[in-house]
Each structure stands twice: as C-alpha cells, then as structure tokens.
Amino acid sequence: MATRRHPRFRTRFDTLCSSGREEGAGVLCDISYAGARLEDASFRPEVGAKVTLYVFIQPVSPFQLQGTVVHRNDSGFAIEYLAESDEIRRLVDDVAAIVSVPGSTGPIES
Image (tube, rainbow, N blue to C red; front, side, top):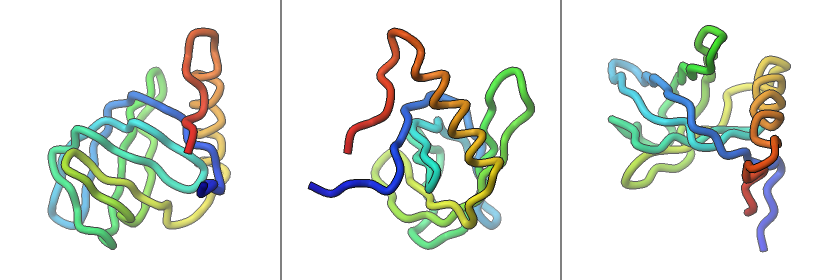
C-alpha cells in the first residue's frame, strides 16, 4: 500500500484557475501541504502545465496557490505546489481545523 508524504483534507471551496491564456473555475476538493485537487473544472490543463488557483475561503480574500499539473481526469486535475511556504502550511492547517470539527470526515485515507 502506497503511503502519501502528507495527509490530504477534503474541502469544498470555489476556485478560479488560470494556465497561460486559459481561465476557468472549479471546486477545490482536497488539499495537502504538497498539492491540491480540483473537480468540476471548466478546463483541464495538460500534465506539466503551470497553473494558478485562486481559492475563495470566506471571510478572507482569495488565497493564491501556484503549481504544476501532475494528474488529470474526466472532471478535474491535481497540482503539486511550485514551492512550499509558510502561507500554504497555514492554509492547510486552517482547513484541517475546519474539517476536524465533530461530524466531519477528517483526513482522506490513501
């Protein structure tokens, strides 16, 4: 059984995305310290493409994530971040705290 480096946390945040001249929207459905995954994406960049995600988490302004597409499927794609940062760690920690409340599912199992 493969083990991930970082736990993933299930989310449901509206997200805008751009890659080169393409722009679209989707739903950030999971996030970790190493990457993120979008579903219901209005476009799916090719593997290897650089993308920027603008994640809308209320009540703060959109949070920006930049990464490289490492996987795509029929409804979305996954990115690996271009660089680790304290801001990404804080975002993931905040998401983990939100999904760790009673009644939530917590980390996604590999």
